[in-house]
Image (tube, rainbow over all chains, first blue to last red; front, top):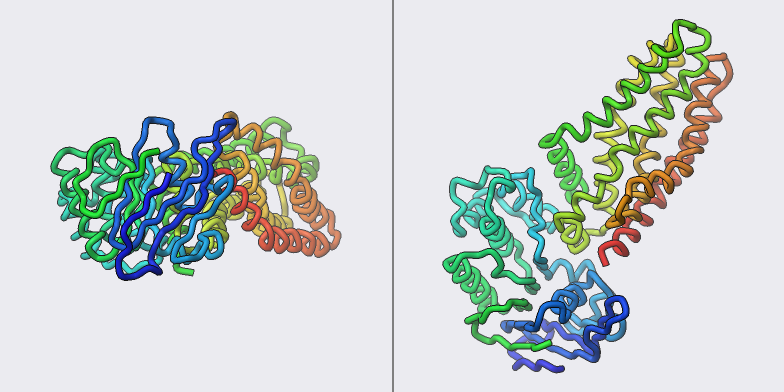
Length: 214
Length: 221
């Protein structure tokens, strides 16, 4: 299985995987998987339930280690300098990773501090407002609906300043308008030479998208 | 450093939003230590004798009550993954979480100790020694406890397993902590106990955050 994507200007900024093999329990999910995504491109990972999409994304983030093979970021194995890699990386799993007892604004600010980025309050508020959370920024997250929680995550994507986005089912729980906004956000990110890896069961209308069928 | 403060701030804020969980552990400490004088009766000599052991055992158990929350809540909502993926050394963030746990579960015990001690008819110097041993000892309890909390992440019935794992490790702290108070109440020199408690704290500070960070990485995978 190989997904080669046309290279653009900056070859240093590329996510590569060589000979990845993933084993869960007794089952081998996939083996000898190669991929390369360069700046400004998006990889759409597709496949049936349980085929190993989430496992692949977790391998790419470095959260789990492959049985064999390696993941390279900028021609360097991500295991060599995980902190430098994490600085460039934003991973959103299918859990919201928001603290239910904190407000949307506090969640965003807390992540900014953890991610070591300066985020003035106006900027955090502007990000929340852009995704339709005006007036709800000071509500605890457990008062928000599932879709609104995902909108808080979109505000985090906007403020995170990461080069590489790895998104697991980013369109889950979103209404049609929010799906459009999410797609716009991804297109915006790609246009400034960002990289996106995402899984989704629906068709995405994003330029420079390459599909990887697992 | 900013990240360390940020995670301490975050954890304290979360505790403030959900006070009941912390107050449970604190109430447990107060109630257990108050039951002993009530049950044993007004025998000052006996109470003075059992005070160090009873107070320290209660401190141990009440620390244990809050331990399972240290990483489990973050693991359940996915924030622990984000902490592992943050561009900060994981050891630093784990240290922050341990410090937050101590501020919430250990520090109140130090502050409450004199009031509890009065019920056991401890004199002023013994009360001061009791506070000092708790001040040195409770951080060790939080540190060692973080290993248990990290190792039992995602395990069903993890809190029972954690007690079995962690309580034996608490024994040295219990012996030296209670020993110091007892020694001072009978007029012996307690500085040796303090040196040993201090050594335990330094050792735990030097090694435990790394061990817990490694355990969390394994648990997340």
